[in-house]
Image 1 (cartoon, one colour):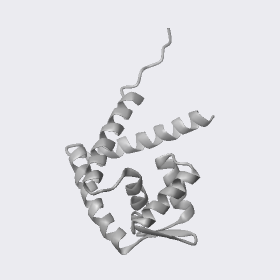
Image 2 (cartoon, rainbow, N blue to C red):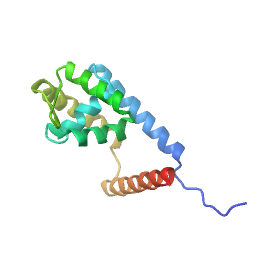
Image 3 (cartoon, rainbow, N blue to C red):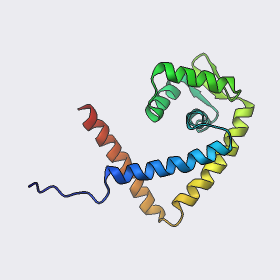
Image 4 (cartoon, rainbow, N blue to C red):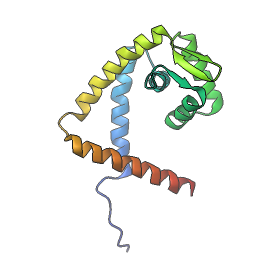
Length: 145
């Protein structure tokens, strides 16, 4: 038998929290007529001030949504067809309608996050974030190494 110490938090625990959080977010987005991938596009662009280099957007969406190039291209075309973004030479940006919708959704998502994270000590949350970032980096290294 191994002397390995079982961690207090397991991947299963993290998965349960991620799925529950995503489900709550999906409910908010559904009420606003958006899908999670569309929100992902808008959030990436909106979080960068409304304009983002195409390579940066593509890399972030591939990592966050796990989409290949064709699916990602189709997603960007669909979001552009909704009038929420424009994709030009080397960059993507929110349209005026997209920026307005992003601000409204950002407020709704912030309200949801406030509900989910209420009552936790900010210092403990900062430590939790650092630990989760490090665990994700280690897991990616283990998966590729």
